Image 1 (cartoon, one colour):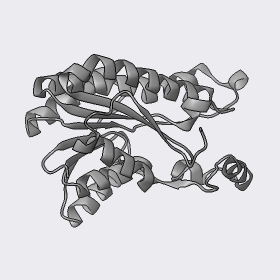
Image 2: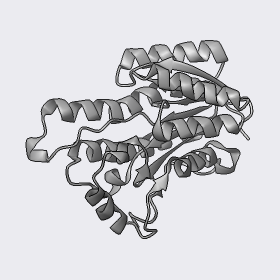
Image 3: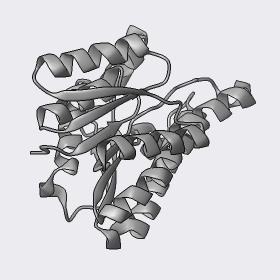
Image 4: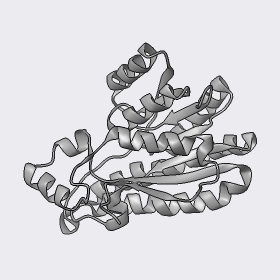
Amino acid sequence: MLNGKVAVVTGASRGIGRAVAIRLAKEGAIVIINYNGSKERAEAVKSEIETAGGRAEIWQCNVSDYSACEEMFKEITAKFGSVDILVNNAGITKDGLLMKMSEEDYDAVLDTNLKGTFNCIRFVARQMIKQRGGRIINMSSVSGVLGNAGQANYSASKAGVIGLTKSAARELASRGITVNAIAPGFINTEMTEVLSDKVKEGAVAQIPMGKFGEAEDIANTVAFLASENAGYITGQVINVDGGMAM
């Protein structure tokens, strides 16, 4: 159980982030629901958690903004006294073939997915070092492990998250802080709903288990990595992908 632990989940207003926030609250954590533009969705997640008897707050911050991240973690620490769990889930896609991809689309994805993860680790680490403990869980992707045509920017950002995870794990291990990554495969979320039936069929054909996963599958893995049961696990990338990347 995570009773009384303070957990920050970035990009928690929908999809995997929403499922993670709800699961951590169910485990007893006080959940900070970070969002960038979807305040109504964030409020809905907060309401769902509170209706079930949990505790949650919403917090607006664009994670790609270095100074804004610094301010967010200062304010959260001042209010709650600690940050025990950070789940770097915020991410965007701007897919396109490499030869046609604009500089703006490349930069936007790297800024949110990779720099945003760095920003949050950079500022949460200070508090976790002071506490001499904490859990950092970064969201990579099967695309960052295998690569994916039409996703050069997304795959690069998620591969970068893996390198960042391993480096941060080495730097912070002696302070009692674990840093791990999860690499989801194809998960039933709004991000995959927009795929054509043909693309979905092609994806399923690559998955040994023969189906897409659910956001709760990722949330279950986050809950484990955030728990005391995972205290001796750090610097790892856990594929939750139905066997796609084995």
